[in-house]
Length: 106
Image (cartoon, rainbow, N blue to C red; front, side, top):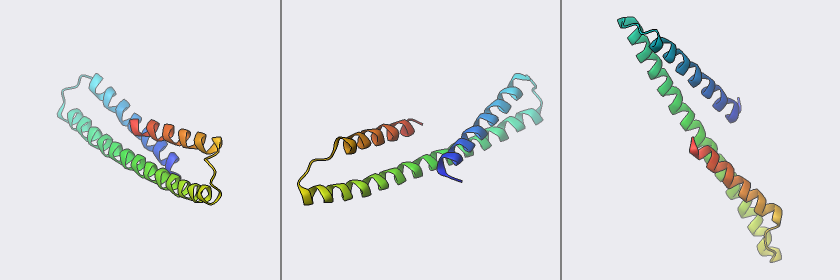
């Protein structure tokens, strides 16, 4: 399963936990069983959120490593030819930074 698929699956599971928690809380049941079930669902959701954070960090690290490798390769070529980065390389870097910021928000 690719990283994005895993992240989407975790998001779906978190949403499902939230929906179940909301339904149980709206039932206004003061029963111990209901309260225990809500507590269990919240613990499961917290675990899923932690997994999602870890997946996001792993993805960001992978993206940074890939960017660094490409940047080193490109700068090595630039030094050999004494050329500045092409507009495509600059745009690629800007898109990469933008994507990193989007995933960092979560």
